[in-house]
Amino acid sequence: MVHKEEGARADVIGISQSISSRLWLSRLTLLVTLLAVLLLLTGSLIRLSDGAACPDWPLCFNRALPTDSSKALVEVVHRVLAALTGSVALGAALIAWRNHVLHGALGRALGWAVGLLAAQTGIGAAVALSRWDAHWTALHLTIGLLTLGAALSAHIEIALPATSCPDDTPEVKRFRRSLRMLAGAVFLLMLSGILVSGNGAALACGQSFPLCNGDWLPNGGRLTFLNWLHRAMVFVVGALLLAILKRAFRRGADVPSPIRAALGLMGITYLSQGALGVAMVALNRPAMMAAAHHALSSALWLAAVAAMLLGARLPMRLPEPAPKPKAAWIALISDYIALTKPKVISLLLFTTLAGMFLTPAGLPRFELVFWTMIGGYLMAGGANAVNMAYDADID
Image 1 (cartoon, helix red, strand yellow):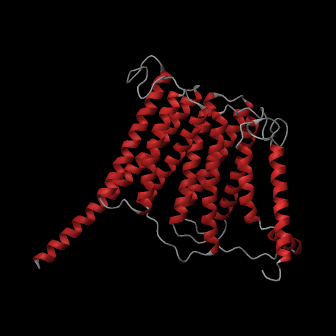
Image 2: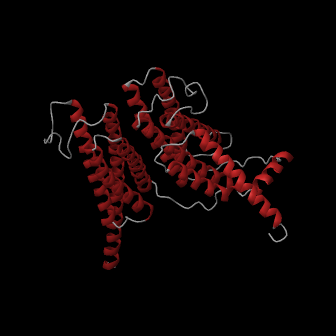
Image 3: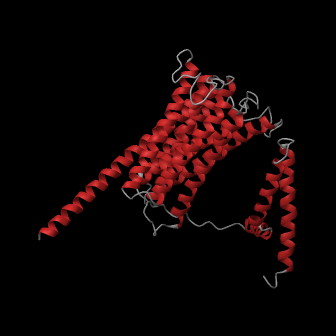
């Protein structure tokens, strides 16, 4: 009887310790996420103030705390935030390891957060010593976005562990897949914005929107193409977000309120960021507007990652769309496209596109890329169609 009571008491103590450790992990991962946001914002302020003020690293003018320059002080704060974020992330990983929960999705998220922060510190040193070279800066900010996503992923994983949903309907599976596509599109939008800002291409399309120098297609050099690509990604993200919002808030949809809140935040930040972007173009990119634009981009990325992760964990019910008969001409076109084997051709076109950009001559003209892709698809698709027609008796 005594042994049973001692065993029960030990179980209670173990459970309480587990709950306490998960509570600490939840707080620490939330703190890492908030610190990563501040890290991105201070980095944006440094970049918008025309680069680095400290000529050395990790000290600034051989001092730990310079007082004669506000720009240098902001850069020192950025470095302190980087060290603090890495320390808190490492502490969270150690607590998870000590309590035997550093495995699965949580272990991967914390591992990525710690690894990315270490890489970001090394690349940050290269950025400072290279006087904020555009390429190093773009890589630094990209890793910052990934770090922010990994930190939020760790927090949601410890606060809301994933559960299997074997009873998902096809419509729910499509909705979850759409959330992943939306998060990927937002990341590409952020990446294109980083390239635009880092290369000084913010006004390469002139002071008009949505036209680029009075045309729908890029009609300039590399910087014009980067600016046009960023604008194109704005419309891609907007179309995906609108379609997902329509499905999440339609009649009969039972989508959990946290997912709806994340999607609603995405809608607000997307519209605000778009309005700021248009105003920046019209007003010749004021510094304060650019800073607010960068801050909203972090909020948009956080909301996209949150919607994706919550969508993978929370149960939901969505009405299946009513089947619509496919028109005869649409079915005929679909059959002809299937003959060309588009999935196979996409791999060929990707290698062709990569080869066109791997040249010391710089980025190719948009017209050349466009017609090369069209011609390559038609050539390979025609060969596939002939092959399938010839082998129709054995396929």
